[in-house]
Image 1: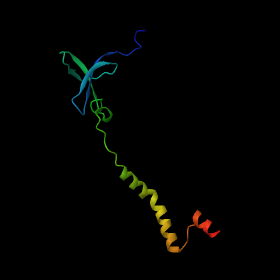
Image 2: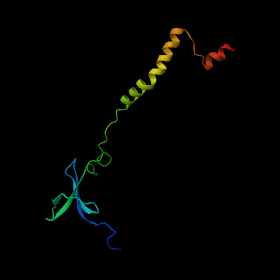
Image 3: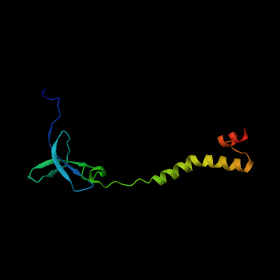
Image 4: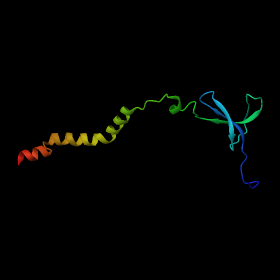
Length: 106
């Protein structure tokens, strides 16, 4: 390998901020913060927001999605226009022609 073009590949400790999980591995990532590891040596510390210890896919603790709220939001945004049209048609006495009524009239 050419000298001076590749980043340093050293031991680094990654720590999950949402749990007390941390692991030591090699990385090109660097940090000014350091931590004393179990072997007594100091290594650069990189804080992560999520790791396999806190990710719902790996922990099996999936969060429920509020799908009812999404449907209500959709209906409020788009469904009201159709509901208003139906109300106006009912008040004016206009009848919507369907396939069944068209066949019955023939």
